[in-house]
Length: 571
Figure 1 (cartoon, helix red, strand yellow):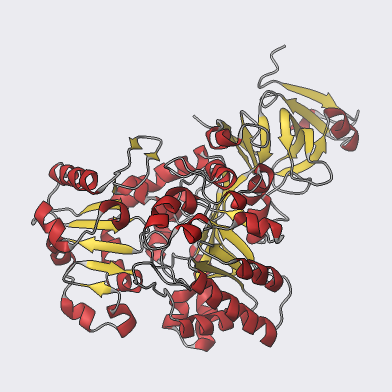
Figure 2 (cartoon, one colour):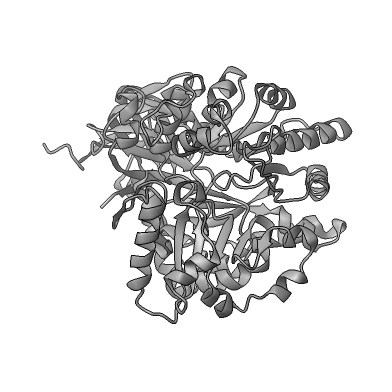
C-alpha cells in the first residue's frame, strides 16, 4: 500500500458514519515532532481537526484519547520533521517589498526566489555598479530607486556624487537602514523638494536634513516620505512586489507575520489587503498601531480613540492586535545614529526618533490605557530612556504582566539587562546585527569591545528574560531558520566569531521564533507550540534544527507549512 498521501480510515466507534468524514480528525505521523510542550517535548504524531490540534502522542495514544471519533491517518510527513509554525515576529510589508521593487546594492549577498544579488563590497564596486544600473534604467522619466547603501562600506555619497552619475534621471538612494535617503538634483526637482520646505519645518526635523547634499535622515524623512512613497509604492509596483513577498515568507516556513508599527497609511493597508488579506494567504498578518503619529497629531484625550479607529482598516487574513502600540526611541543601527552613552569614536552623535519629552508623554498615555508597548531601541542611551520611562510609570501606576517589548536591542549594558529583567520587560532582538556589522563597527565608530557584544542574547538567557528573534526584512533575511542560525553561531560575514558568550542554544533560538515570539504578541495560547487546543500551525522540515550541526541550521530544507489545518507545500 502506498502510504504517502494515503488515508487509512479507522472507525473507532460503530456509530460513526460516512457523513462525518467532513469533520473527521486527521493524524499526521512524522519522523520527529518537536512540540515545545514541557510535558512531552517530542511526540510521534499529531491529530488535527479542521484548524485545531486535537491530540499529540503515538498513534495508539491518539486513537485511545479520541475514541468515538472518525480518524484518518495521513503519512505524507512520515519521513519529515514537524516543528511549531515559524513566526516572523517583526516585519513591515512595505519595507520588505523593497527587495522586489528597488535595485539592490547592499553590504551582503541577497538570495531571493527569482535572483541572487552579490554584495557591493567597497566604494569602487558600489559606484561602478550604480553607474551600470543607471545606464540600463529603462525609463528616464521614472525615478530609479536603489537600496542597500552604507557609508562605512561604500564611502560618503552626496547629491553632487549622484549628479555626476546622471543629471537627468531622478535617483533616490535608500540607505541600508531605510532611515536615510539621498537624492540627486533631478529627484529633488521631480518631487518638488526645495529649501523652503525645510526652512518651514520644526527645528528637530530641520536638524536632520541637508538640502545641499540631498540628504534626509530620521525625522527629516518625514518632510518627503509621503511624496516619495506615493510614487515608490504606486499600485503597479507594490502589488506585484507583495505577491513575491508573500511567496518569500511562505518559502521561509512562516505561519504568522506581525508588523509592529510603522504603517498608518490607509492607502498602503488597502493595497496590502488585496494581496495579504485574501483567504489564500498562507499565513495571518497582525498589525500593531504606530503610536508616534497619533501622539503627534491629536490632543491627548483623543489619542486612544484615534488609534483604535485604525483597527477597522484591516480585513480577511490581516488584522490589528487590539491594545498594542509601537513607539520609537533612538536612531538606526545601520546608520550609526543610535544614542550611545559613551558616544562614538569619531565624535558624531546619535539621533532621537521621538524627542524624549514626546516619548515620555506617549508612553504615559498608552501605559495608562493598558496597552502593551513595543519600543524601537538601538543604542544603550536609548535603552536608558526607555527603562527610565518604564520605571517611572511602574512606580506611578503599577501594572502586572505589561510585557513591554524592547525591539531590536542593538546595544545594551549588563546593568541594563538586569534592570529590564527586574522591571518585567521582554526583548525582540535582531540577531543579524552582529553578523553583518560587528567587524566593521569594531573599526569604525563603536570600537571592538562594544561592537562584539551587541545584541546580548546570552546575557538575556542568563537573566531569564523572555526573548524573541525578528528579521525586520530587509534589515535581515526574512527567514526564521536563518535568524536561529545567527543567534546560535554569531559568525560574521567575514567568518569571525562575534561575542561568543552571547550565543544561545538551538532550543532557545527555536523558542524565540515560535513560542516566545507568540508570547511577545500575547498569542501564546493560540500558537507557538504543538499543544491540543492551539491552532494547527506547523512548519515541515527535512531535518531537525535541534540536532543538525549548528552551522547548518539556516540551510535546512523546508517542505512547506500547515496553517490552521491547511496543508501548504512549497512549489
